[in-house]
Length: 353
Ligand SMILES: Nc1nc2c(ncn2[C@@H]2O[C@H](COP(=O)(O)OP(=O)(O)OP(=O)(O)O)[C@@H](O)[C@H]2O)c(=O)[nH]1
Ligand SMILES: [Mg+2]
Image (cartoon, rainbow, N blue to C red; front, side, top):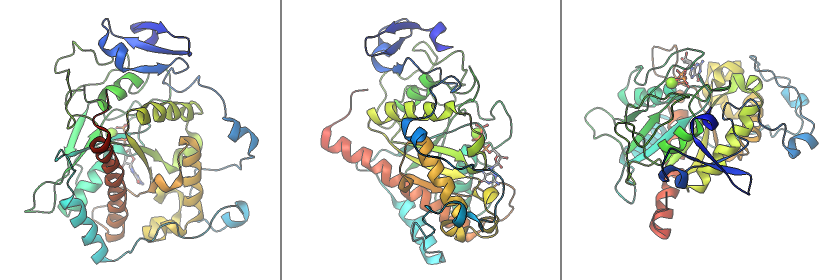
């Protein structure tokens, strides 16, 4: 664990700073003492969760028919007005293709989530819809130990013949649910701050070090992450380990301190609602999906307005217009949040990292 590998500096506020043999990272990375990052031994339910009776949620398929009586408090109405027309889809594609940041730097977005939640699939799905065919751009796969191991960045290419978009997505190793597994807290913050070189292979027991080949000493604004996208699998929400909640909340604290906004993607919605699986157009009418969004919001301490349900392309051979529209709406939301980072930079000046 990190505690053993790194020098530990205990402080009076019950937090500790990690140092990698020099003062550089001790200054920049500050991790709560309760974090083992594997998420297993973190604190129990939050006070809000203790006082609020929760109802059992299963991750299994559900047509959603009985949920109104099961969850009377649920708002069974459309949350967002997405127009499911080809014109709207083209509008979103043009908006994303022509998006420019005020600094001129490309938007760098980091996808973070448990192993197998659909991070690489989201990148591939977005690239597929712009390419006009389903392709496995970011490596998608199933492995309990996690399929993605390296930092890989993907600049989303616009439509054929158009320039690449200003959107770059960073794919990294998933969060582990067992001790000493998955990407470390330290490595996540190093990616966000822009210290991590492209292709860096993550090792839970050997976090990035200033002596690592390619370590970026003085990252520019273009090297830093401007928006973090949490990715959760709706069909596994009920089975995610309890510690993951604490892990996310600690991550959110640290990421927010860096001035980086966060959005959440709720994937695998086709697995929790049969109606949505038939046509994603029904997503905001699905009580099951709405209930999963509330559950994800509770887990992350995040408003449901920052949570987007999406269906990634997984076994499909052909693109589907409504699936594309939902994916594009998620990208649109991500760009809006990334824009807040650039707006803050413009008004407050660069944050010290
Ligand atoms: N049905 C369905 N399957 C999905 C969806 N998103 C991803 N998958 C499948 O879930 C599995 C894991 O997807 P990945 O994109 O590799 O997940 P990841 O988060 O990158 O996983 P790691 O790299 O291992 O951390 C693959 O078999 C995907 O095809 C979705 O929205 N619906
Ligand atoms: Mg992956």
